[in-house]
Length: 512
Image 1 (tube, one colour):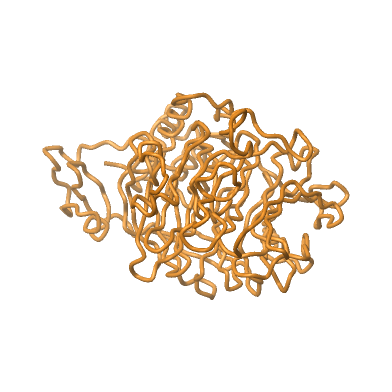
Image 2: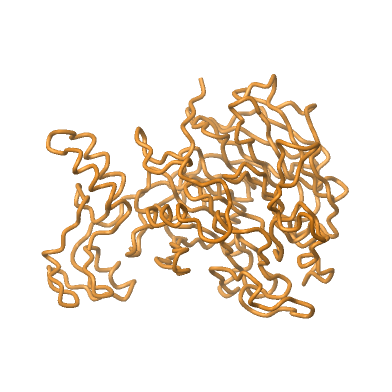
């Protein structure tokens, strides 16, 4: 019997922040509910060097795995895409209860392209998959190179079925690809219920066809369609070019190859890892309450740097990435990831993780949309490279997320890994950082440029010993799920509702 969880709940037995907090009615200008929600979910401000994470391999022997994810609320299964084996793309099921990869594919799709980056590239489940709409949407490149968005239905209309019906194929959208690379390939449903489709600029080098800036082309865009209305779809009324020149499917423009994107399951914000040309990789961020029509700059800019500005709009009309990095150290192709919202690694809460396909480096950082600042940046390559049960993480094709918010890594070489908790180093003393006190290890203090005092001392005239840490029940330096569970486990002996409210009020904060 498959088990399903309520979408958006991050703590077993208690939904602190649920998907219902999202205001799905987009409005112009800042959305106050979104501002308050992001503030509530802000991660711990002090970046510790060791995130206390590692990997374990859950599957091997796959053919070019490029996706791992889940059906809405399904905690029993993962779905893994094999981009192609010969000219067949497959979706496989990994049973989380038995920790086994099922031998029979969930769905096999013949006739996919075998060229370059092409094949079966992405999938998404209808938000009402378990509520009368057991539909699976895929993004693939056909044997002729065209991008095809197609819908399939679970066998016998049963969402718990172990297969989908290949005969149920229903084509939603098709468009040409000039070259066999830069196909995009990601699709996903937003909190607004619409299907988002990431498309690349069509390939080649430098977008010589200027597709990304051409509003009459679907290439180099984020598309957004309504699959519940129209035949085969309708275009939402607030898309960028409704009743104006330009394709009605377009939500935003100016993308090069947004191969790996994700929605923050708590805020609805969209994160896009956009692969660069010769020098710069970038991460673009779109808040859930953003208006349509954003221009992310390609081919005018590569990251924050001019590339070919001929015929381009003013830079003031563009949306630049929140983060970029160059190709030093063997890096060359970003793989966008996820904001961690799981249960098992509380100290990773609110951090965004991403990697580089070429170097297999991996990094995390926190982003504050209110101030447009990145903090807590650190490399986690060493922590995640070697799996605890064999295998090494490399050729990072995509990250994925299960129904509980735990994260996974697809290695194009044929393996899938799960990111799991490792016990972080125990705090050893006080670190003075930005005139505040933090109880951490000496190496953590050194890595952020702090002044390590060892025993309790003062920081900026503040007595560290006198600093309270409201809500830190287990005294580990963070207010997180462990404190919440301690309060629940010891309810009325000694903890009361006041203690519970204190933990919630200080959620995801680091102790001074």
